[in-house]
Image 1: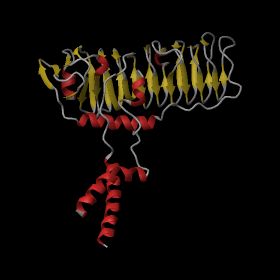
Image 2: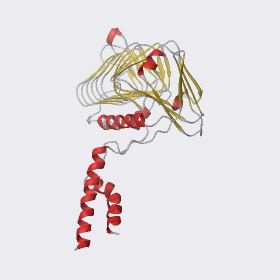
Image 3: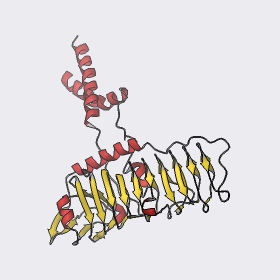
Image 4: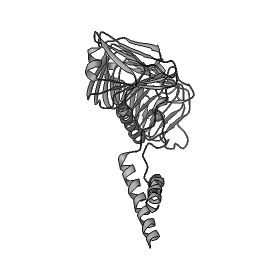
Length: 352
């Protein structure tokens, strides 16, 4: 009886001990893709792109440079014109072209001839040099504000620091855990390789979660042949791809039943991902990867570490339902140790 009570107490106090000790996963408040799910492109590091656009919202934890190859980049063309559609943790550099909506930049801004329809919040310096362009919303620049003589509002009378709407490090920790957890799930759909075509098929409830394991070699070999996914309409499909360096290029992607807003490609091990000459139907989760998006488009979201290239991001946000990652092992061990200690004390008192 005493042993049974101790076991019950230990199990009940695992999470209580964690909370009492102030230890919890950094991602405890997030679900699905967290804040990244609201963005068309979400990067933890740097973004260096050219001659392209992202139709939805853009978030970058590091620096952004859209001026390489003497080019420019449009952001938020299909997003809420009254929202904050550009969030940058470092410095931002662009030229000409349009931002639909407003921006928060934690570092400096260097933008020649911009057209910005919303509010401008810059915690460093902002140089909107050369003639042309306009800003439609109020300006709040903490550092030096440089502007043409017309088309640009004055700076706020008393500029204040604008905090970022989320912690990039916390989101990264959560999505790395989520990616690893999804990769650990046992596949419950069938896979077949037919003349190097990859066929993924699932049958079951319309609201189900269907996971598939595809090797990086199989995905690379499918270039020029195709990827076929069949699953019930309304279900969520997760395609787990292994390998540190992967290619996702030169293939048609064909969906039956399930739509692109319910498909997630999970590159949980990838540190390098090359995308080229493809229209990707779905969202990419590659939280460790430096992505070379050389050419093509994604009809979904890209979540990665760094990104370069001229690929386009089209606004089709992920709408599927994902399981939450299990607590980190270190958290469980610490909580269990605390509970065990409390249980031992109770047992000793009972014996006395």
